[in-house]
Image (cartoon, rainbow, N blue to C red; front, side, top):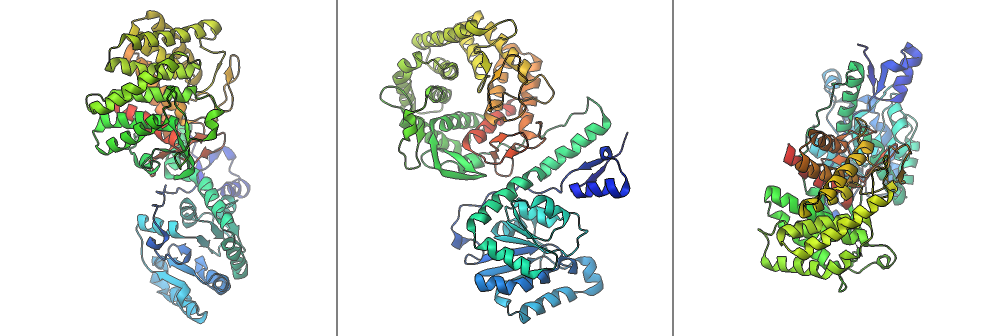
Length: 595
């Protein structure tokens, strides 16, 4: 077994190679870990600490090496331009320093504050703070100052923690800050208060620059979350042990609807988010509210949580709001509750299919919902039926079959069964038109929401007792899995282009919704055929959210309860919109069935 040296920066790795002649294959860079942080609560500025102040801060065990006097010397110039600045120096004196020198360095700093007449602009927080309180201070910070005077300091936990809180940074050029700060802050020379003041004044004069730095800090630091650090250590152990039997045991996160609730107004679920904050300008869609209705319905079935009922009613009312007189559903709604013009320009068949699916899933709660609501949903179905029969999009057809399947369980109506049969025959016709020995599919390519097609055909087979539907469903689903689950690390079809026969499958551009559809389909096929491989694949598919992906990074954020929007070639998209968050929730609820 070969040992490896773990270092936290690329420069440290270079020093080991150049100065100590350690070969590259014996070195592994795993960054300093950071905590995931809950988003700010949407409170007014007057309710936060120091509401009228612009906060600069430094934290950590106080010692001369931090060179806090550099920041103090810069402060008069900064205050002359921004009189509301308050500099927080957070932390107790380092215990080893305290043993030798007592509070000599802190006394020196406090004397300097008085000499500079900055008493109103400096506050010493001489305490050990709990992690939660420390992170709140950092979230309240406008600019974090890192003033270490030691060029040999390789890494800084305080710097990493400040970035994880989304702080724009001004820092001396230690290796850690040089590697991390690109776009997230400004480096200045050691013990140079003039440069520090210049940087602070520049940043405080440019709110857009600071907001960009805040977002860049979050994106640059996100791979260092402790969860990702744990995955990196597991992968390292696996590579050293060189055994195929070594598998990570991913623990299921607690089911959380925190971000679902954060994204939901009294009218519906907002479409997009900027990191974890709802982007109200993006408005609402039937797509997202349909998925949310399905997820909260399933959560209520599992937990009986009465808070779900409010959400269920919100999403149901939104879908009914979008139902038109002709039986179709419009998809896009503004935050002012008007319909976007782009409803006229886009093909909305898939959105209509998702609405029908959601209404059908809602009816699975018929034993718990009022007759009045049942009647509303039944009326919506009857109005939409003529439109459903004319659908051409294979995914819209599949979504509708799923909704009609539940409608048929609720109301054993021959007309519903007749429409299911027509839609399933349409899928069979598409399959026969393009399939071949090596291409067992409904289209000449694989694209989005692929798993929904065989799942819907299987449900149609269960309703109609058709062996043709069931056999075709299984054949096509196994074909899909042979492409997406061919390797240990599962990857669905990329969103950057269609996958045609004979092509190499792209390994990035993956979205949570595709994994959710796959997990729902795997559950359906396992229920029908009881093949252990389906169950194994279901569990390993879910692990994509927990780090079993090509970047070895978490996609679900257990701190916010949100799910990141996508996995790209070199980074995770940190925005936690409605589609991704509900997709994770649907997947997690399914896992509870097998936990």
